Length: 195
Image 1 (cartoon, rainbow, N blue to C red):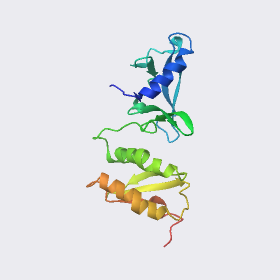
Image 2 (cartoon, rainbow, N blue to C red):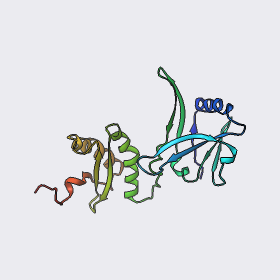
Image 3 (cartoon, helix red, strand yellow):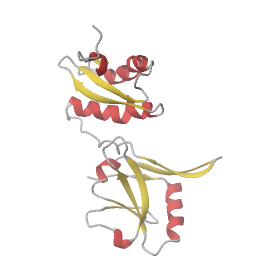
């Protein structure tokens, strides 16, 4: 399986410059810390020849190669490394849409595909507000029960966010499979429900 990490020309030039100051044959390593979890982080480090593992995947670029360890590999699909210069100066940006969750195949279960959509589409939008959503279950009648956490907890806008944003987006995406998205906490007939 070929994992393609895009390293833009400006980022390649930036790495090439940095590598000039390193011992000969030093390349870069692209990796994911805590892959497959909500706090996954994508990173880049120097990779001297002695640090290359037999199981690494080598991706060759013009001035250098990027090595990726076996564990990080599936989570770096569609990743992009760019070097952006703006008024604030220059910085390296790393986008790895699949770092928190590996890409799922189209024939995966609805639960898996929905979980992937939540992690890659919904949660990045909520992260700006310090919140996140996790999928609890999908009922027999196609209702996805989700749990709000972080900054969403107790926020008065949860219902609006759920109805206007999340539910609309997901029901449309999983048309025919999903009928609604509900907040699991109010769906619970447990101790905190209001009869």
